Amino acid sequence: MRSPELAVEKLWGPINGLYVAAYAAPVDDGGRYCAYAKVCWREPQSYWDAQCLFKLFGGEQHGSAEAAMAQVRRVAFARVACVPAAAVSLLDVASREDSLHVFVPLVSAIRWRVRDA
Image 1: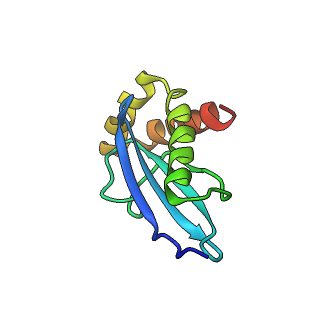
Image 2: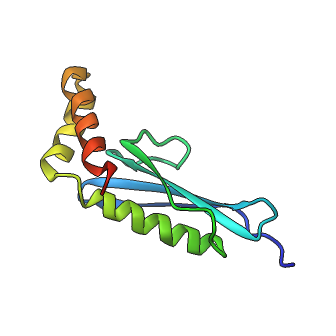
């Protein structure tokens, strides 16, 4: 059996004004890999400190960390394409001004829109 690869972390963006922070890691004995992504309105320093709009799962049956990362990237980019540009431009302003009456409904609307995409 081959030795398992280490976990991989990656950041992409901006894509339509949003950033994607992703993480892939070995599952069980390292024979397969899973991946997760967070879609963010600000550029995060890492996957772990990312404040996100929503999280995504890229599956756990991948043969390598790279394959898992490629799948979660495809899923994240497809979801990002569903977010209206006008909503993205309002996110940063609403979050900086502590406009929770704007920010929270906007985030909820974005999550609803991409939920079934």
